[in-house]
Image (cartoon, rainbow over all chains, first blue to last red; front, side, top):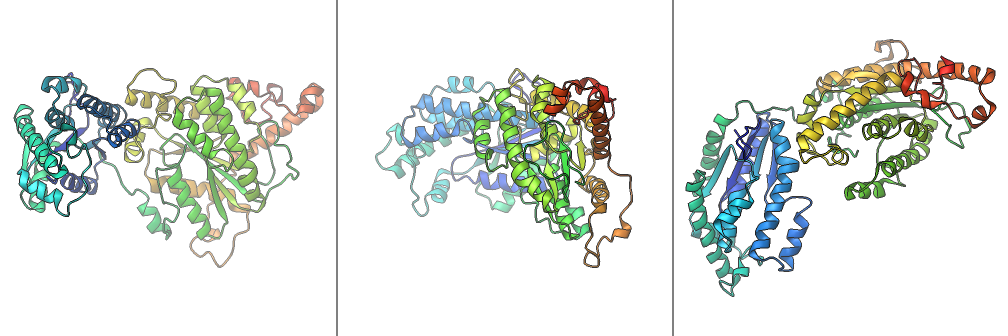
Length: 251
Length: 305
């Protein structure tokens, strides 16, 4: 059950995944998403930093290095607030399953690693819905770094934590920053009783565990037919050539 | 359309009295499944040898881009929004719908003036004003109204686009609760459509059912409408003309025609010459007399009834 901050239960289910970069949480959430859809559930997906009204400002702040640790924290809170109000909460009230790639615990770990006050960052997110199930993908720092840094990708300024001044070298900065985040996550797992998943296991084993953890919470979740026109196509011998973007019509 | 008929002041520049095509309207609230049904119907018509085309809101060459931009800004007032949509509609009527009807197409339109009237009325816009603005609309051959309740609507919306600003009535409802606003706004819209169904002789289709059931109902209705069009013979084996059910003619046009006749008679005998000359129908009375048959067409004068 997902609940409002005041404890009011919501009809839908909120499943969220957390973990440092390279923990493989997005891969597992994507597999979970496909499984739930194939089982006929009504599923809505949302990810960190994706509000249509806030995202551009965050992007601008990152590109132009305009963000302090506090403004970084606040803009991400604004982003989640918008997504909760316009997307997550209405979907939960209608009985849908909502999947969130990163949630408030990302802010608790990352922003504190950036130097903001632990209690303050928890306080600004007091509007957040309590998830039905929060999965933490636990991986040793070296393994995640290896996954991310293979091929030496270009690291972005804030992504590498360069705003903290830990090191001139982006890769070294990234290592130190991710290490700090990992440390914060380990406190958070206990504090908020996140469910840890061993992210060093084979992907298929992890997914089996994820599904097993999710399964008991699915009772009462709303279902929907994903391709309700299928029968018409087969009966009438049609191909669905004009069915390109159902649900995308302009109003 | 066998005979051209307008709801109010005729569209200037229409020379002919008849158009060989058929105008089919699919109405209903946001997310009810109109576009899915239209996609299926269009392909089905073409498979059976009928030239078919479709149009819908914000698809005009003139106003589509600007209207979408204005909606993103969230600052449009009611008057501006109504007139902007009317602009988009008349551009499509003149440049897409009428030319296609002239060429003998079956034109399926996703929404028509009734959506604009419903939206305007939930926002408190003068019902008489909005009807006169849109008086240039052709009376369609049939108006299908996909009628749904909000509870059935919710999963469809979440599964497709999520809760849109305008579709949740955020511009006129108070408070931050998107879910409450959505349920309230869509409930009010559906109430408006239900009232318009009587006023404009909608063919009401239960859209709480599945896509195949709704499709079968629409197909049967369209078969009646296109019954008098020439059917390409041997080449359409799937659904021979003989199998097509013969149902009574759709009511909207017949009623409108009868009412128009009555109004013309009334106008000739007692209406003031000024009104008659302007061709301005007394649409002001339409909402009040919604129960009367033939209301909502240019003949809906109380004197005609």
